[in-house]
Length: 426
Image 1 (tube, rainbow, N blue to C red):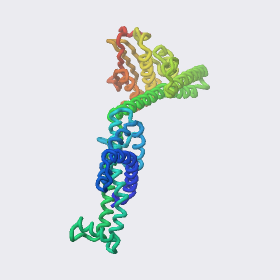
Image 2: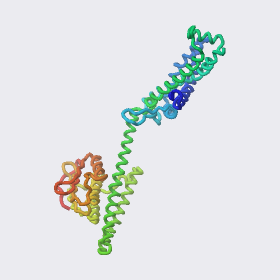
Image 3: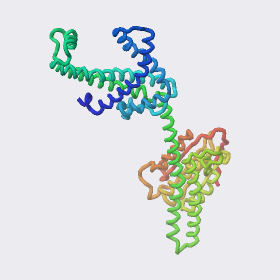
Image 4: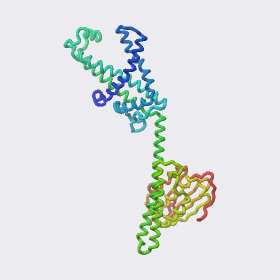
């Protein structure tokens, strides 16, 4: 019963009446054209002209619906009145009419088909809404002589000698109007996401845009985690060390405070780089294209030494000639790897190897597993960020405990056209 008399049925009736109103200009123009082509004053030809005007008006409506903005207007009306969202195919999400104009011809054809369906069904429901209630009222009053002899004779010719009473025909006619309204509204609601929704090309473009946005967000998350996270970890360790020996070893405390100052200054500079990415700055001197590279590796190793992680570095030739993008990614991976050493193993020695071999950059970082290292492998976001950076360069990585009691991180990144050589101690 709610489908016939509920709020949804009322909204769909308004939507259908709107379609009937949109049909009127085309119908009137078609009637004028047909009247000129088929002159006649009899009621029969006149009624035929009015009926023929409906299919004649539909092609004109279809042509005007090719205007791109029609999809926006019809989509807004369908969302508000038609309740046209239906479950998406293969997902639990609802598919709704698109909110953008129909720029492609595929979208325009769909919109045109929808508009024709809307005005056709709207014309039917509108015509019935105008004619059925008065007819039902007269039928209800027919037992009291309201129809007169001509009306009673028309009922007799229609239904025969045993014609039902007007008290039954009136409500039946109203019920027919409700059923037609519900059926037409349900049909429009089912067709709205298909005809007014995004085309496959538009869905593909939206998915690509969403993937690009997620990739950008992941990149920002990695930059923040690796740069600011590294600085905070180093500063917290250095501050704790300085506070412990502040009164017993003032020279070491002064070195720790100087390291804190240097680390914080570098972190502020890298934060500006990340904010540049967030603001989507793309000028030639934009900080989005700047950042530390392997040329700053000595500074990073020195900062880690002040924090208690003494790094033995073995580097091969050709690292200075790496492309800036690859060099920046390699620096970030080393930075995050050393930060993980500091965060999880504490002040322990580490061994770093960087080498160009077989057209790829190989990176290995090993350290003893400290007592405070978590037992679960993989850690948190750090190793995941390293894996994402390696995959973005079509490389790979692995990390985990070794039989000799150390933790090892190994990363390889393609570096075509670069020289190779054995690592030399630095």
